[in-house]
Length: 120
Image (cartoon, one colour):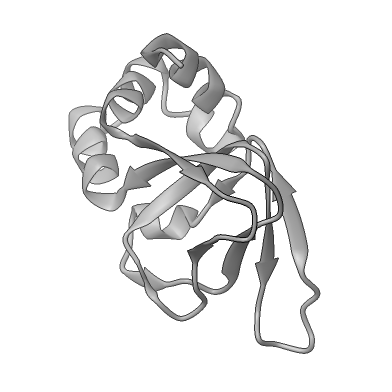
């Protein structure tokens, strides 16, 4: 995918759309696109979180250790770990690829630098 394709894709994520196209360009340039094999774990509940992920392709099962919370399946266009973009936190769930997938990883440092450049 080209940078322009990534920007158009990221614009579809409601939480990120409000940042504006110029800010999204910075994210698209600095973010990593990563393949995730079916059955691979993207992150584990309880581990420190330093980035958010936008699901580009495929789907992920989010599971917690709580018996009160059912597993959730999320697909393309979902932002995972949004709180980690702005604050030190731990992952609340384990994300496992339900199928061959691809994510865009946005590090907290990149996101915060983008906010400095586009504070509005």
